[in-house]
Length: 298
Image (cartoon, rainbow, N blue to C red; front, top):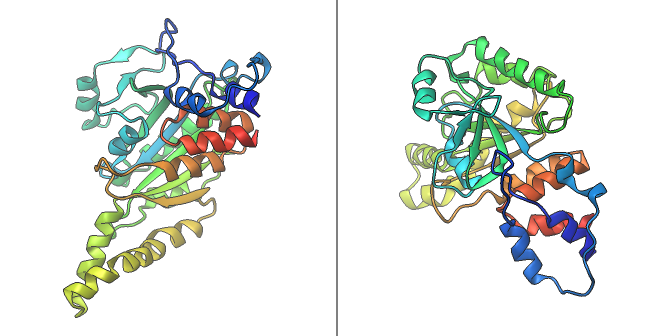
């Protein structure tokens, strides 16, 4: 078992140009917990990183869905990501910010955090505009990545962010269209219902408007928010032709005390390819228990 775990934990941090590496901090922490009972024998044949150096995720969602906050939490970063074009050339973030308002945001651009360069994110924006043009761009991007000849270039997972606090328009036409179209193949889609704390605030106000006391409303807001989450988001998503692979809600992601462990767990569970699952678990740095779970399972 220890040999398998060490093989799983052995990984290098690619700097983006392939010029340097550094030890994995999760792997180091785990090794400190392991007994040194037998020598480690590395096997290139089972080395996940010989097949793929990065885990590639498409992040879909409205501008107010808290995507940037989520990605910073995932990569344990306080800095914004660096932006690279499809050829790996770094892009001035000011140029990208300026182009976003003009509708020139490029889904092909790669977002990489210096704190964890093994994740590559692609950001799709503009679904809230109601235009099918952005939806079609996403469909084309997914199709092109599915046709890529190497695992490195393919899309590995989709995180679909919906702001749960926005109950005035839970699902847009573009959202419904996406989950009615079978375009993603085996790529898992995790529906991330962000800003649940905002939904709880709405639930509190609803209870107060219905004549409940402040104390009773405070006590019952979580349960009512869960009910709203189910009726306004989860049930409508489940009714689509191609529903998400899994669902989760997130709250207070701007606070230091919150984490994204559940997102890591659900993404790992949704991956059907063992190689990709091991790659994902080794890349993520948030959940040590998850690393142990899949290393031992192997």
